[in-house]
Image (cartoon, rainbow, N blue to C red; front, top):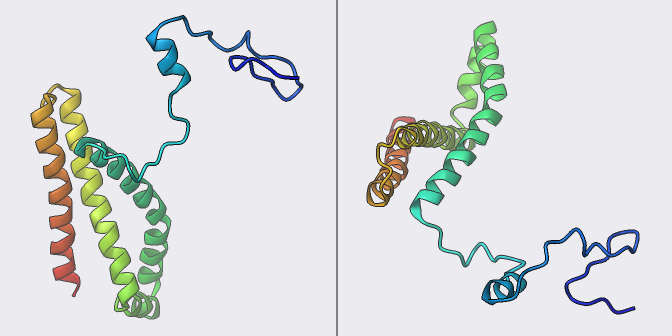
Length: 154
């Protein structure tokens, strides 16, 4: 049983063409039918504002994930001298220092990106040129804070 291209079958085998919006004739209809289905995200060049926004979301997830670990380490270090010694010894390892550096970057990126979003909500820095500058500033300042933290850690 062959269906016309604008009709789809759902799981029960019924035609769901009535549920889909039928494109009107014209160039928009052709564009709608030939839209990309699978985007190759590695080939799309996103603007710097979009990258800053994505980094803001990723840094938020990193910060939320790191809170339980930080609370555990703080509790362990405050319990007694042995716990403090364990946490101090833990922070001498390269992997832990690298994780701390990543969390410092996440904190800087999230705070600076959040301030940028708040300012654009008030209309400050909304024009395209200013928005690009502020996005570059946020990204570079977060990296600078992380490099400063790397100098302090090592």
